[in-house]
Length: 142
Image (cartoon, rainbow, N blue to C red; front, side):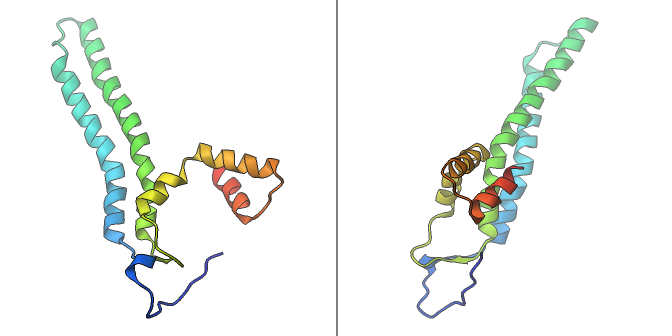
């Protein structure tokens, strides 16, 4: 359930998050662009570090290395970059807190991963807790 509250005179900047849509788009764009750029850099470095092939077999090996290394870099960096997506979502949000607003990076660090979420759902099931957040978490994991 989301409760919407109008801004009051006594609200201070410390108890609200202002939406930052431009910064959110920059983070989302970086999640896409950074792995691609790192992959291109890895391909260039691999191509320059390996000796030039002289035979057909060595040419095939050279191309395999030039394609496999950047692909590995792409997958690894993409996996790491996607961890910034919750931050992009939080940057879009404008929220009011009853007390001092937490830092967005701290919220992202505490949010954990899908493995952590699955562990929490399993704990809730073993303790017999069936409430709205547990149901929402189950839907996210499916």
